[in-house]
Image (cartoon, rainbow, N blue to C red; front, side, top):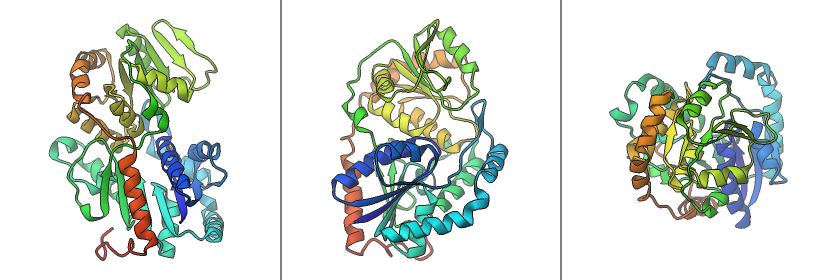
Length: 367
C-alpha cells in the first residue's frame, strides 16, 4: 500500500518509535512517504530518502518546566504566518503520492490530509492513552483540571482516526475499546539486542535545559553518574568528581542504560519503556507543565517499576535508591516479545484498509 506517515517533531521519542514502524513497513514492501517536523525530520532524513520537512510546534523550557506563553510567541514568530502557503504546498506534494492510508504519530498535517480526502487513518503513539483510557482517582489526584485540558487537546489532535494503536507498559481499562488497541512499548532494535547487566552507576537523562540543581543533588549521592543532555555543547566526556557529563551517542547511551544500577530522568515515555524492558528502576521527575509525563510517572510508580517525584532533592534521591531492590523484583516479572504484537496489529489494520473495511466502523459522531 501507499502509506503517508506523519511524525511530530517535538521530543525525539516519536521519531525513534516511528523508525521502528517505518522499517517494518518498508520491509513488507509498502511505499511510504514521510512527513516530519523539527528534530524528527533531521533524525529520519539520515535514514530514509523520502522525508519532507513541515512546520511543527516546539516547546520552550526553563528550569525543568514548560513555558506556555513563551512557547506560543516563539511558534507564532517562526512560521505560523506562513501556514496557508504551507498547507497548499503540503497537499500538492502529498496528492502526487496519492496515499491509500495515513499513519500518524501525533502529527496533525497527515491526519488532516486523511480526514479531508476520506482515507483510513491509523494513530500510532502513546499519548492517546490519556483520552481513550479510564484513569482512577489515585492517578488523577490533584491534577484533574490539567488532565481535562490535556485530554481535550490530545483527543482533538487526531480526532476521528479509524484506529488508535497505543504503546504502553501499563494497562488501564479502555473507554473506547472498539477502535483502540494497547500494545507494549515499541523498542528500537538496539534496545532489544542489549544485554542488561548490573553496574554501579546511575544513568541520568535530562533534556529540559536550565536544570542545574540536579547536578548538585547527584554530586551528594556519591554514586558514579553518567549524565546526558544537561550540557549539549560537549564533544567529549567531562568528568567532575562522581559526575561524568557525556555528549549524546546512541550506542554509548544504550550501553550505559543497559548496565546502569538505576535511571534518573523526566517523564519521557520512550526512555521509560526502554528502562522497563531492560528492568532498570527509574526515578521520574516530569517536566513541569507536561501532564502526559506526570501520568506516565504515576503509573510507573503504581506498577512498582520506579518512583515519581515532582522535584528532586537529596532526600528524594536517597528514598528512591533505597527502593531500587523492591523495583528490581517487580521488574523481573515484566516481559514482552519485542515488537511482534504491535506489528501484527498494524499489519492487520493495513489489511483491513486494503480491503476497504477499516473506515466507517466508528459510531457516528464518535471521535
